[in-house]
Length: 167
Picture 1 (tube, rainbow, N blue to C red):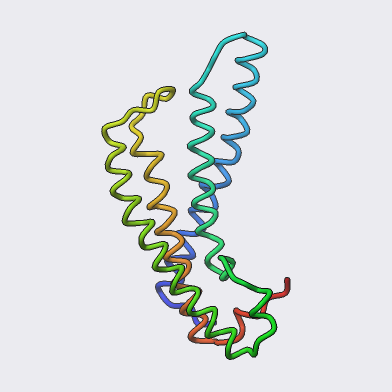
Picture 2 (picture 1 turned 120 degrees about the horizontal axis):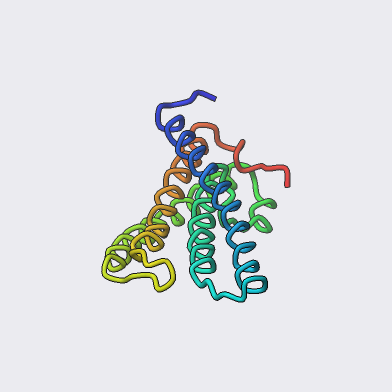
């Protein structure tokens, strides 16, 4: 496959997102253990651990879902498309990807305005601006859109190869 500058850039962003997801996963585990330790050993309430784990989980889920779009692992109706010709599969996959792209674009735009509202709200446990947790929605949406664009470009350049997977 001929790599373009855009796909190489998206691959670097994906590598960064994978590292963030890996670190967030470990941090969630440590925060859950800290919550157990505080609650059952020290008999202290530590709501910030639960809140931090929740926000990290949101960031991790949205970034990881963005990574799934790279290979077209987004919403598809495989039950119907597998019974059609290869040419129709590519056409359906392209149309579904374009519809998904419009949906993701609306998520990004509404997510930005929602994140702006978070500037004026403070998280009760962590005492941070809610802008940071809310920013996960447009950031995840941008990653989804970048990876979906790479998938569409590969689909247009080499039709039929990305549609037939080994599931």
